[in-house]
Amino acid sequence: MPRYVAFLRALNVGGQHVVRMDALKRRFERLGFTEVETFIASGNVVFSARSAKGLDAKIAGALEAALGYEVATFVRTLEELAAAAAHEPFPKSERETAARILVGFLSRELDAAAHACVAGLETGVDRFHVRGREFWWLSKNKQSGAEITGRALERALGQPTTLRGINTILRMAARYRPEDPGE
Image 1 (cartoon, rainbow, N blue to C red):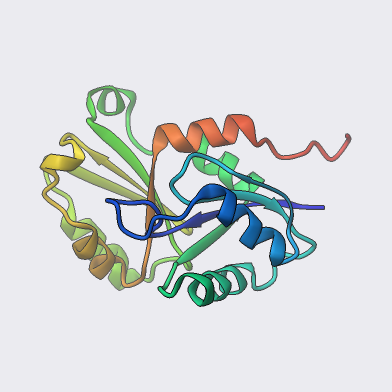
Image 2: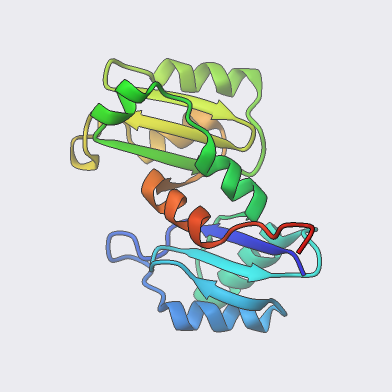
């Protein structure tokens, strides 16, 4: 059965909307998913499902009903996770001096206007790269010194997003590898 990763927005961030990972795992199992695992307590859930169709909406709807607030959900296959981890949009010299590199997940690809808005956010401190339903944000500032807010970023994107540090993405991709079709 295919495996997926759900990146959930607004769980266990800043002390708001705290959800225990064992409770989150049970909610996914109640939805009929199997092999459910959580990866660090920040809304990353790996699971198996028969079909990819409608997973984002199914999970988001169930979590909103159970938790009482909207939980934007971004589902990716293990292959898509591996591709995001392998993608290196910034030169090595910039990666080595960055304070942080984040990967953002989107529901849909950006249109030309959103691409232009994101490009308009770039500064000497912050750079962005968009590919498909993901984007990368390299910043020379730590989160505490960020010049760009999540709200400004979502306005530029024209849609919700959730961000993960590149190290989290690399660790997840190393742990949850796509199955070799020959196995």
